[in-house]
Image (cartoon, rainbow over all chains, first blue to last red; front, side):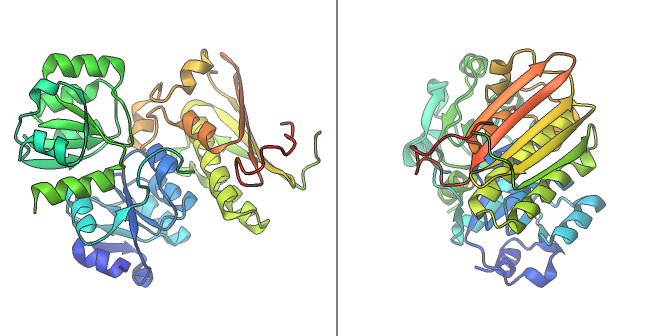
Length: 121
Length: 111
Length: 156
């Protein structure tokens, strides 16, 4: 699936990275705790979150996340957008809640980026 | 759908309040920020979270949530478990991360 | 055996500067990439740097993060002028946190930071003095973890 298809499934608005919608996506990680993301998320996944501060972009950059999906119609701050543009990390915003966002993407074949915890390093 | 069915179908481990798993699950909510869950979850939601401290029981109780699913094998903290048992709030545990367990729950409650 | 590093650099981190938190970690990540360090090691070092940086920003007045790269390992040393940690064993426990509401709103402060630093480093040593500050030394070996258990351990 491409980021464009993710955008369509979630009826999302592309806030950063319109030029990167052809990027492929297979896996995702959903969380509001950035330490949780740092502990478990894998490179080239989608990050689904309700947080909108610049640390979300930093975390995505540290982990080579493909794109950030903000849920519940959340809009990022100006600093967040600026940093995402600088680090070339796409941000999409969907009005669905995290449960619905995860459910819809999972139903279309996106899988969790880890199967379960333990030995994931 | 009953919480009991989700427990059975998804092989969730019942960690607390086993006597209260015959509740109806009307929807789901995922979140690790308690203020968000307080504000936006709905009665009868099953709540998927990474938080383990005892405030999760207070939130679930106040919002009449159907139960709490802890992800990635997280166990409830000691006082969390005691409070959940006392208040009859089921706490279930899965080894899966949020995205994956939510995908499976979604498929069962919104087929 | 103490090897002389082939690359070494220190970075200042300002306490309370939430807006810039992660800046140093981003720089360190790029330096390691440029040095040709393998992707997996870069990722692990970036994660421990970032958690360290968040800790300094969250708790200390100021601090430094020093990166040293040798043939065998990448070392990260952090020093801060913060409150210090009275009980290190307790602080290492996952879920234990003294974070403020501001830190929690950023998505940190859930008591997972030190646990992440330990998880992603091969060696971690914390020394701390209450009222003075905390020093954390971490090392990520520059070869796949557990594959070479017989190789000599490099001192921190």
